[in-house]
Length: 253
Image (cartoon, rainbow, N blue to C red):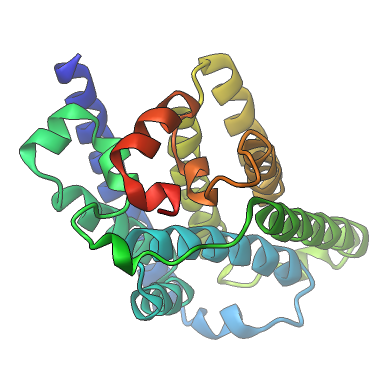
C-alpha cells in the first residue's frame, strides 16, 4: 500500500513538472511571435468565454490557497501570478506543497497532505470561512456565468468571421485552461471512489470546461451538512470522520 501511495505522489509531482514546462514553452512561444498584447485584446468575442473559464480557475485555486495558508497576502500574490503566468504559478505552488512534505507524509498519503492545511498552525489562527449555502450560491452563479459566456460565444462567433478571433495568444490561453483542467482532474480522481464516475466527470470537464467543475463542486457541497466547514469538500468522503477528529482546523473549532 505504501509503495502505491508513493508511486501516486511521484506520478502527480512528475506530471506537474511536465505541465509547468509545457506552459512555460507556450508563454515563450507567444512572447517570441509578439502576440503577448493579444491577451489583453478583449474585442475578440471568444475572449469572453475564455476569460470566464480562466476566472473560475483563479477562484478555485485562490480559495484553496487561502484555506491552505490562512493568508490573504499569499493568496493575493498567487492570484496575481496566475493572471501573469497562468498555470506556471499554479503548478509551482502545488509543487512547493509536495516538497514541503516529510518522508512519512509522502509515503503515507501524499495527496491528502498536499491538500490539507498546515496542522502546525495554532488553532487560534483559524477563522470561520463561508457557509456551505454561500459556497453553493457562489459556484452556482459562476457556473451560470460560464454557461452564458459559452452560449454567447457559440452564437456570436460561429460565423464567417470566427477565424479572425484566433489571435496569437489563443493556443497559449487554451494550453493554460487545459492544464488547469488536468490539475482538477487529478483532484476529482483523488476524491471519487469509483473510476467510472471519475472518468465521466473528467471527460465532461475536458469537453465543457469549468461549467463542469462548478457543477461538481456544488454536488460535493450537497454532501456536507450546513453546520460543517466548507473545507471538507477538498477531501474524500470516507476521510471526513478522520479529518474532523485529527485536524481541529477543519472542524471550525
